[in-house]
Each structure stands twice: as C-alpha cells, then as structure tokens.
Length: 532
Figure (cartoon, rainbow, N blue to C red):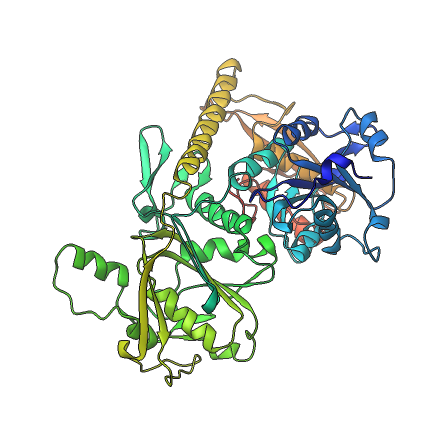
C-alpha cells in the first residue's frame, strides 16, 4: 500500500508539514466522483512535495478507486486492518502509523477530516486537524473546535501560510538543565499591512486591545495562529500540555487577547487551557508601563523585580498535586528580560512540573536573565512568597535574536488584504450587472454571498434528521437598490406561513441544530480557532 519513493532513507529533518492525511469522504463525494477542487488540491500537495495519505475504514483498491474519479494514487493508503490493534477512528494510532510508515514526526503531519472522530484522531495523536467543511457537517453535542476549510483551496491556504514555513523566532532560549524553553515570535517594533495605505503594530492588538481587521481576518488570530503553528513545527507545543496565560498586573485578570484565542486553540494538539493556573493575588506595578516611564526618563520608584512577582503571583492552590510531571506552556504578549517567565518557572519547578515552555508574541531586546533560588532558599508555590532579589542567583545572556517571520507574515497579511479586495470587486461587479427593479421579489436562483450559501447548504443538509421545509427568495425593499434575501422555513406542526430575514433564519437554524445534536455556526461566527 506504500510506494518506495514515499518512505525515503531516513527521518525527514524539515520542520514543516510533510504529509497530509485525508479522510476519503473529503476526497470522494460518491464512488467515482471527486469533490470539487480536490484534484487541484492534490496537485498542489504534489507540487509542494507533500505526501498525500488516504484514510479509509474498510480495505479497498485505493489506486483504482481514485483513478476512476480522475485522481492520482496516494503515497500511502491506510485502512483499519493496517493499524495495530485495529482501533476505530478516533484513536491516535492511525496517525502514529502514518508517521511510522513515512518516517516522519507527528508534527510533520496534518489531518484533513470530516467527522468528530477524525477530530479526535488528531487530538489523540497531537496532530493538527483541519475540518473539511466542503464534505460534511459535524454532529457533536459537546462542540468541536478546530481549524476549518470551506473548500480544498482553503486547506491549501492554511498549509501555505501557517505550516509550510520553517519556524523562525525573534528570540529563542533553551535551558535544558532547568527544563525551560522560551520562544518569542517577533521583535516589538514591526508593522504589518492592514489595508491599502494602512498598517498596524503589535501593541495595537496586544497592549491597546484593539480589534484589527486585515482583509476579512482578525489580526490577533493570524498572529496567534502563527505563534502556535511555529511552536508546533518547532516541537515546542507538546501533546497534552497545559496552557495558561501569565496574569496581568491586576488580580483576577489575564490578557483577554491571549485568553480569547487560547480558549478555542487549546485543542490544536489536544492540550488543556487553564486560565486560573497562575493567579495574581494582589496588585503589582504594570511592568510595561514602568519600563516606558524609565525609557522616557520619568521618575519612578515602582518595584518591577522578580521579588515583586514573588509577592503577588502564585499557583492556584486548587492545582496542588495535579500538575506534577506535566508540561506547562505559558503565554504572554511581550517579554523583555524575562522576569515574569522566570518567576513562573520557579513556581512550576517547585510544584514539580516536568517542563516549562514560554511562548510570547514579542521580545524587547536580545537579553534574558535567568533566576535560580539560592541553596537553602525554599518557597511554597501555592502561596505568595516574601523573598528578595538577594535570594536569587541571576545570570544574563542572549539567545538567538532575529527578525522572526516578519517577511513571511507580511506576505500573509498582504494575501488577506488582496483576497478581500478581490471578493469586494467581484461582488460589486455582480451588483452592477444585475438590473434591480425596486420592490420586486423573485425565487433565489443562486445564493447572494457565502453567508447565505452557508445557510442554504445547512438547511438542505439538516432535512434528513429534522423535518423542515424551506425556500428562499431574492428581494429588493421598496425605496432601496440593494438585493437581500427572505427565507421561508416551516417546522413540523407549524400552520402559518413564516418568512425570516437572514439574521432571523440563522438564529432559528442554530436553535434547530442544537436540538438535533448537530454542530453548525453562522458564517463569520463559527467558533473555531481559525483565521478564516
């Protein structure tokens, strides 16, 4: 089932995705019929030297089956009989077998799936999962948070901009003796395109808390996804780790920009987000603000040393006995000399975690100061500690400073800007070509935009499990020149005719899906950790 060329002589040392495992339902719409766009996607994978792996439950002649649909043979085909122990889909053994056969690490694989069980397969192997929305809608009462693609080309876009670039860091530091790794994505002063003639800086998003839209994407999501995908490729996003955010200077608060993304993104490799793992007990000086004051020559007596962190930050006592032997990944927006990271490491090491990884968006300067408690000095990690700077031995050094992925991220941001411009131009051209008599109504021959297409698609797909009837009309309100949509949806036992605008129809369908145990989100509010 595997070609000789696909195996190679040894482990592929590239830190990028080298194989994409695809569930057969994302490839074939029906026997002998491929999904629209899948042939181009498989060709794109081949052009980028990425192995195509086909996953099926039952044994079949993969080469003949795909040939009948006009598709190339996979580099590897695996069915349940090929997986040790014959586990059902959902077991990470499927992707571990892919890695073993192709001589790859699991973080060199991406999974494109069509069901909750594919999602669980990725989680249980620590492999990035992309849901193929073009192939199915997911039934999952608990909720499935994942990257997603509306069509095969979107999966290629995710790979190209987030998983095919060798990870590059503005700062990296590995301290094996203290089981600490630090990765910072970018220098703090970079600017990225937001729209033609407009740019934004990292502080706009992570310090000032602004929502910056790049094309149709949230800049925070693009930057955070690049941080996590780089760590995934770098091997610094271990499977089943605990995610937390270093607390803000005020008690009970963390960066909502970071937390808002990680709440969903925790499942990227099957990890767990614990927002309250580290907690600020009493208020501390805002280190970023204090450093700005000092750089401006303003007088300040605020203590921003590691001792100030020790007096105010602890591990939440409810985690006593629950984190021993775990890997903890700490997220922060910016780091300068690493005081916060070092105090977090000190606390977690005292609680006997196995490894601490710190991931930050930005890094000021190129220096990091390591702090080690002096022999004979003990702390209680589950309470605040009255220690002083003199209780630590510190060493300052540099670690791999650079520009990080500034250039490639600029390309990504420009891509989203240009894509949005193209979509707007197409919509404008279509509107100009259509004669619009005011006040007229006519049956919808095709959906007006992606949002309405998404709604119509699910109304059709839900019918086998929930007996509703529907139709849609295009409508021009009196006194206006815009085309909108009206939706006629009738439910079991409903006698009167009922029409809904698009907002109302989306809310009704979301309620129906919840009752039917089907996961569906209106376009633009889908709940996944994706920049799309």
